[in-house]
Image (cartoon, rainbow, N blue to C red; front, side, top):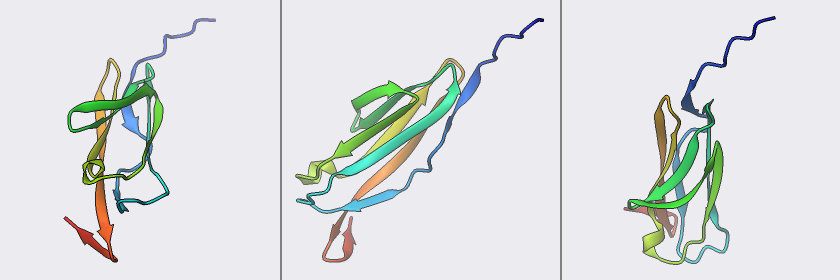
Length: 102
């Protein structure tokens, strides 16, 4: 019986990116979930302002406790294997008195 080798598969995102809303001093942390599939298993990173905040393989959760305006902005989930690089972005916005401030 001959088994053919497993072919590399491109990285694909399992979850859809979305906007996330919170406020400074929120006692409940915001969690960004990054899940990707592919073969070989992709290396996953969460990046904000050019800095890698966390890394893992295939999936990653990153928790943000909102203490200042610097915590808001774009968080990018990026995954890479030998076949493809894939990313998705979360826009983390301020909510204040029921209104979103930009």
